[in-house]
Length: 385
Image (cartoon, rainbow, N blue to C red; front, top):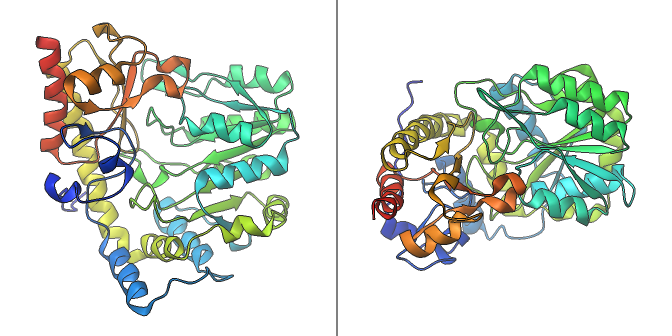
């Protein structure tokens, strides 16, 4: 890839931001915990938002905000995925979309499979929908992590009604193969279950092909829904907008029947920003981001080998989040607390991702190489002392 890497903003500029990453902890702590990036916005997004502010365009989101068309074009360009526009709808954020779909396709008390360790809101979202979490851990393999299809089949055979999939997976960065996704779809069809796929990290695959669940097979389209957003890829989490996609006419009918306020939760600035992010104008910025993150995921591997040689880290296939096992250092089940207090770095708490997260931290490497280096060196100094 010939794109030029992005340059992160300097720390003194970043600390002027008012978002969670820069307000939760004091300035002596380097933040790597939440999924916010340290880079300037894509220029097309900045132009669109500035124009809206200049116009005073701060009213209600219109019935047709352009999100459908923007996403369909983006999916075709970036994923070679032909999405029927009639199956695309929108809401405030990915977890809003997930909970509303689960409410529509499950009954109170139904069990929903989640593949731990997994993004912590998955647990709350299933419960908010009135369902019950059924944990089926990812299978650890020589090359990383995979869906435990035998475990998922056992859960479905025992009555689980849905699978809440993370594709690509957070926190491991696993990009599930087309074959694995198709096999999951076959299981769902066999047992009359539904798959809801969170694909927010899909545009951030590194050197491997991301397969949208609904594109994995005809069966996947027949049993599935996907929910995604430009928010992770383009650092827009504070601007509320996400996309819900049904695999076919029946799923589109379900999405169309959701309460009207599900669509109304979409913020106007969120729609404006997502449209700009999904446009071809932002492709060059995204290509540069991928170059930057690719370098950082490998830099982190080198830094860990140098300063934390007992830690276990598999370079992720996608995203900007690293899943690191530091249990060999004896910092307890939740090492992030110890490291924040003693090394002055804030990583995400491993146990929040499930039992498998004990002794782990999640590290956000969407920052400058210098900040990443300083963070790992601080932990390394703690080890050395």
